[in-house]
Image 1 (cartoon, one colour):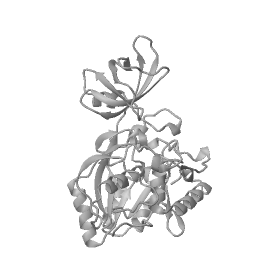
Image 2 (tube, rainbow, N blue to C red):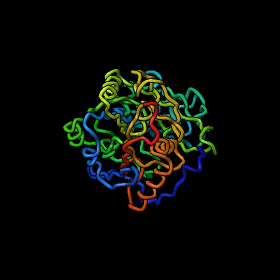
Image 3 (tube, helix red, strand yellow):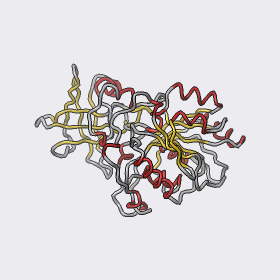
Image 4 (cartoon, one colour):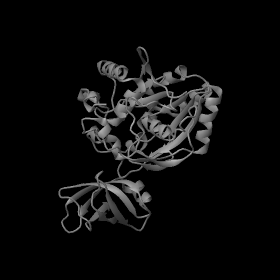
Length: 353
């Protein structure tokens, strides 16, 4: 796929910089042979009983830290990306001058202070390895002193309300630095209504990394260096999908992160089954991919020239999704992480099933 096929023009005022007052009041664009405009609560009437809803239960870390370089007092912003061990993390850093190996950053956090030492230069993905020297576990320090890592396009600092709203109600496993945003639309009442309809809820974990926001800078998507994200599919979720296949029910993915995990774990040649497994995935889903597992998708509206938009093009059909985005802009839908939802009831090019 050519990268310029992923371009579109979005008026700045349609970027959702704050969440709606309540989670399940978001609008939902239903994309089929024609489009329909509904509320996210319309999912209850749209899905069949016994559908398996798969959600991502990753929890966003308050992984954004601010400090000063020891010796020069230059300001440094750090985003911890992935824990390597109890004190060492992969991280991204922004400062006036590049941080060299051995540089020490003092993180000032209220009534405490801890040090961060750079142990490796940036790799091809712009990640450093840093060691954190502190008297408390790093996760506890982040929870108390870290900042919610809002996406850059929001153009604002995090606020107290983001600690709750940039987190799904089913967030359970800490490790993400960005929210699985399709899940932000669901509240307990909507989940209860889906259960009452006969929907089965299942979960997996995919820790969303900063690469999810990385734009495609090459002309051909095949040349894009896809970022890695770690995922785990528990046995109970693999079993729920197997039972769905036995009874002829659909599997609905809540978000592109769920699609990435399920399609990465697809058992080739099976009738839509997945392995219970944990791994890193660099899967790049673009038009031409034959989906093996996912039958329907709830997703947000994604950035231009992004791999997430390529995934949605692959799932719903490029022309159909392109027309849906144009309709959403005309109808003043809210875009991106805190924005409205899109429901694609079925994949246009199902896999082997």
